[in-house]
Image (cartoon, rainbow, N blue to C red; front, side):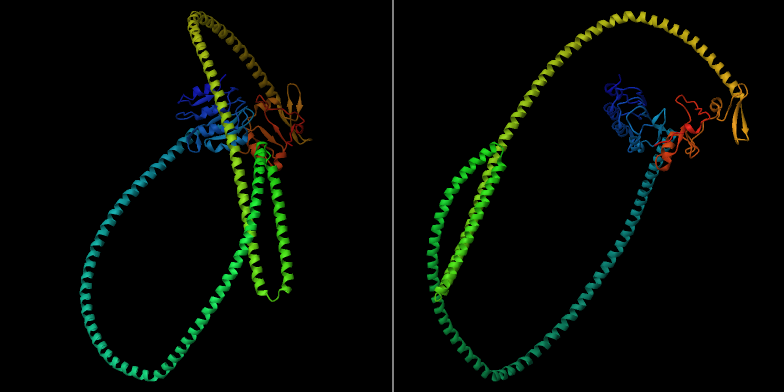
Length: 591
């Protein structure tokens, strides 16, 4: 009956070292999670879960994560998992957390078995860690002392160096000041000499320059007169050209003003006609928009908005296609009209070209205006759709809030019911406590009678068990004596015809090629040929070697060795198996 509650109580036992839960079928992964969260000092070293059929690999993971004394190492040394749902793969996955244990799997045990001298190994590991820590602390102390000593030496040396540098700097600054004074005096004298020389050269140069200017003026005077005459003629020509150009510009401006007035009146006429068309289209569009809004609202209420959107899109595409076709037709007709009037109005080609350019510009402006109107209509449609979506989302949120309030109200009612049930349970517990108090008085009177009866039963059971043990030991001694006599009766001989040994019973005269059961049990248990530590349980026919369960799984796991025939050396009760004369027939081949 041990379950989660019992393990919660055991988790408060801080000094727990070993825990045996064998055949406790109520133990599951949740109960092991409670045990893994507990804190045991110095730690749980042995846990037996044999027969706990509800324990899985998840429970093993919680145990390995919870029971740790250091990062990456668990305190458990012995862990019995026989009869659980834990697989060998799951155990191998957490094997690294158990450094002082090894995986052991045979007919009687499955789980983690401690290594030899595991406590001494753990002590040596802890001792090594502490020694390393002490050595590290000592090295850090030495390093700190050396650093202090080196720092003091460096400070002294830097101080001495600083003093020398200050002295050198002072001497250098004094020498530089003296040298600067000498350089300045020398530069001053040089500057005065240079100024005197410059003044002298300036006087000479001014005289020479005045002579050169007179000679140059004499040479350039005729050329300058010709240049002035050319400039004057050019100025007169430019003024005349300017007057003619201003007259031409005035004439062009008047022509442009008249053409602009004509174009403005024509644009006014086109704009009025366009405005009338746009007004009619606006009224039609408002009517269509109202109908579309009603359609969208109905479709959103009935959750078929996508179908209506596809219909509107198809209508819009058809309208765009027809408008494009009309525009192409108008452009084709206009080009035909221009082509026909080209020959009839050859003399007015220039005016007609301007008129045609104006019409084309108006046409492109109308196309741009229609495109802008289309964008405005699409924006309005998107705005209406988003507003409708917001309304629907608001309704959905309101409905969700109502459902949440109903759920909270039902939870509150359920809580009130639970409070009433708890009050009933408390009253029932109080009545039970009073009943238990009365029962203690009755139990106290019966205790003495029960103790006396138990004392008599123990005396009788002790007497009967002593007689039974004596009889059993006497029969065991007789069987041992008879087996010893039978073992001495067998004799090993050699057959020259078969070239092999055989066994002869001197008492019964029996002859057999295989070793009899008495001699098999008398032989020592063979050890594993691979690890040479554990007792062997399996014999391989091809390898002619003995293996324990773990080494057999490791060596004959895959490849050609997985198909080697083998036989078991011991039966369920631990006795050597006598395979008789038909020895090869007892080999088992794994397929």
